Length: 148
Image (cartoon, rainbow, N blue to C red; front, side, top):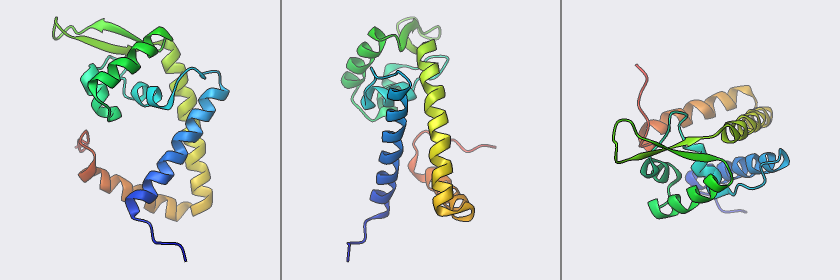
């Protein structure tokens, strides 16, 4: 009999599978110059721009690692630096049109993953899974802000 895995590990396995599918879909769509680590950084870039420290925190990497990943993304045309109008000493990282196109492909793959999971679990269980994960987000996501 297989050992009972911790819930957090089960969630990580599912998340890793989804990430792998998204990366594979991006590669198939011609975005084969982005690594998984770079993709995690790209996913955290807000359209209006994001500070490198925030990107590092979102991707759960050091600021130095984020800076190195960002340099590669800039050279590949996925990110650009712009002045932070709120702080003249700071810069923001903004996505390029290429990044936004890649994100569109990623979102389509996310929808396919959700459809596959729903087909496997059934609509009721998928709804329960989503509701449970949204509740857990309230106590696990440092960026969570409740909607009024």
